[in-house]
Image (cartoon, rainbow, N blue to C red; front, side, top):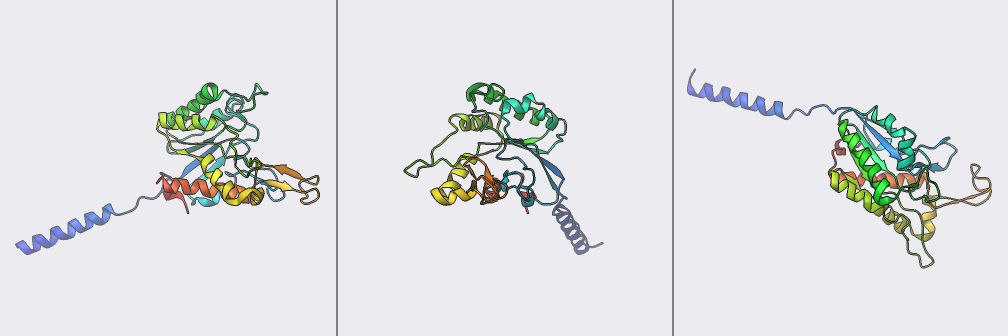
Length: 253
């Protein structure tokens, strides 16, 4: 075999090796678990019920390699979610590379309810740490989120915070344990302000008496989300993950 034949053979072999390296590995199937409160939770009778949780509308954003299991429940705080064994039931299912979206705070604030209230700097913080550490121990990947805002405009049209120190503690836990953090408080502040004082009612549950059959006596709720509001929140969550080049980017449609 002369020099030129050897050179040609080597060129072909190198080309084949490069092509083999460029073969894309098939995506692994993963489950995304959500733990939190009513702002995330699936609602009963979704065809008739105008209220939606933002994780309820999240599955269509992902490809068929993702299953979303929404374990968020109305009225739960970190304290009650753990005490009722709900977190343990999620931990038992976790597999390596699964994802856990964590968002609590609305009900941790309820000082007059000893079964739900947590001091933001002590019990709330340590409950979040427990959830994060136990997820990591199972090989899962937690994503911490601050709470979405309430539609709370004052007379001057300023959106006023209602969450106090809770969002800061979420941010601090995320930094301390080096896990992804999505600032849902900031993202939903921008959302409410972009819609404005009046149009932001569409993001929530505002109905006059007789306007909607699900609320025959009317409804004025500035915490929970309409279908529009839930989809707007979910879009912002997804975009935040894309902007941060999250490991979930390849799983989005």
